Amino acid sequence: MPEVEIKIGGRAFEVFCQDGEEHYLHSAAKMLDTEASVLAGQIGRLPEARMLLMAGLMLADKTAGLEDKLREAEARMAEKEAEIARLMARPAPEPQKIEVAVIPPELMETLSELAARAESLADAVEDKAG
Image 1: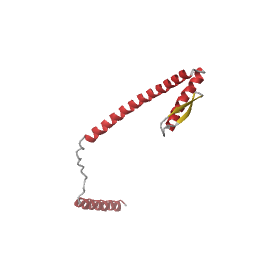
Image 2 (image 1 turned 180 degrees about the horizontal axis):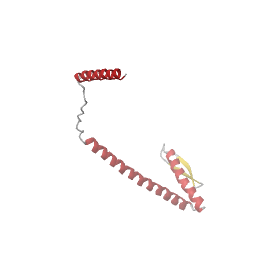
Image 3 (image 1 turned 180 degrees about the vertical axis):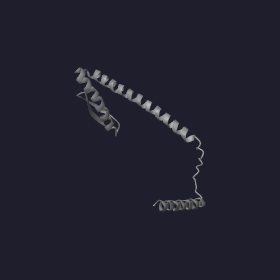
Image 4 (image 1 turned 90 degrees about the horizontal axis):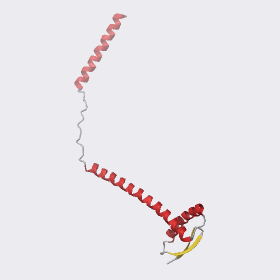
């Protein structure tokens, strides 16, 4: 079990931790030191026990706020998952029948003939007018 020295509020502490958990201990100590530094800056020198208590309470307050946000996010996520499940469970919509107009070839021929006659008539009118 390794012994690790940590510093909180300018004071050194020797603590033990499980093998491989030194990084977590240093990280937690840094968080506690940050809160202790805030206290020292606001209040000044405090007895060790009071400084650690206040810093711990400040961290606990932050943690409680994060836990509330986490619960809210989990509730929103559960709502979205339920909505997705509801949408996935719905039956598929009925296929829609779409009709596309098809012009029969006979009609195309008739329209071509009419266009040719109209051009012929237009030419005849121009000849008479000119």
